[in-house]
Length: 269
Image 1 (cartoon, rainbow, N blue to C red):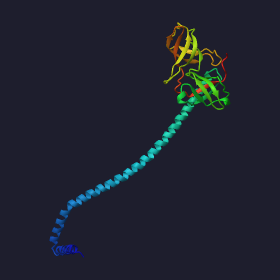
Image 2: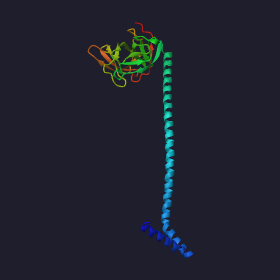
Image 3: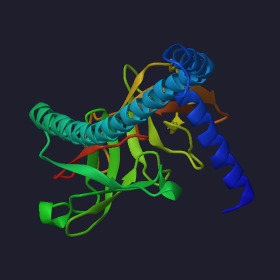
């Protein structure tokens, strides 16, 4: 045994012997002095124990909350999926109602179709629809929406077709302005851009008396588009040396095409 440990043991035994040989009163005084000296340490230990227990409880509670949050996140994700499916079904039902109402209201024999593809580079020129030769669709047939003329069929395939839009300068339509004798050729403009690009009605009379808001319709000439299909409204008139041209805002929202209708019969020439 090391000398220091031996000295400590002898001091402890000596102190214990001395304490045991004291009278009961002396022992109580010693005990009182000891507890008085130790009370601050015992109190501090009790506070630390309470804090440690509270921290343990809080940690346990935090873990429970974390578990609940994880479960709630899963529920929110599931509800979002359900909401997304519900919105898709609601949109589909709206499209079916739109198709049914249009078929009831129109005098044409039409096939309803959905726009399934648009290329950013040709956004205002062409779209693809999910109907084709299988649905008796051929070339040069008018394509409508419940807002007016969309364009014409360009290339039909078995189950899909390409549509040239009215906003493409290659889609030219014989058009008239309501309330006037003015007749011209309506087409899109090169470099069309914006949320709803404008059209141009050319070859009007030199002194065409048009006003903003007048509606423009198809004449039925040319053998493709039936008569009296809404094309748009006049926004402005530009006078030229030999004729006039009108700027027309299309009636169809070409930025957001959904359900369209292909007219299965061509117009009479």
